Length: 272
Image (cartoon, rainbow, N blue to C red):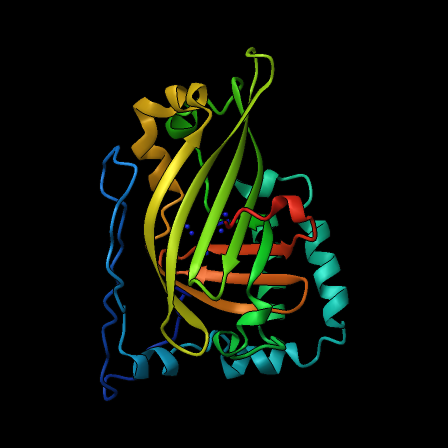
């Protein structure tokens, strides 16, 4: 995915106390990539909050969840194994999943987040760098969007990879496609982005440019290219809510969850 791949955390819902307690509004902002066919777009970094506020709000797990999860005796390895089993056979969730399955996945994600062995991932970027393979996300392509992009019968989605170059502050997402009827034409959408540390667990991300290869595949997507880029929009921020040597979980400012596992194949390294 920048396997935005590096396309907010979902704020914890709280019950408001009696009228005597002052309510505070939280203003959210959503950003989409402007509709354009330009191959290169320069976007300045935007901090969603000040560094102080970002650090104060970077924790995803409340005390109540920590108390609840403390009774779970499963090891991290067991939880990760169960999560990878649950997300099998659902095509990374891109075409939607039943609500019960989604709830099961999110419960396991929250359990892992509550036991994150790397609470300050941006101070340990060696764990974040390298190539990752997307196994699940809450980004979906449904209904008319799926039809317009030809993703029902004619074009199928392959693997999603994300490579992160820590030294350069760059991320590259590669989305593979296979086209039936054209001698099984293979191609890919490549989206490049830059990232900047915003807090101990968050990075700000700015879209740089994108390409589709080969030209035959670009011709198929040209009419709906803005739609395709909008789905895999990288602009915004990403909270790294869990990371270890083999798995990474993130939540973005649009409310999406991403689960990736580290890829060991050198041939999948897409950062030049």
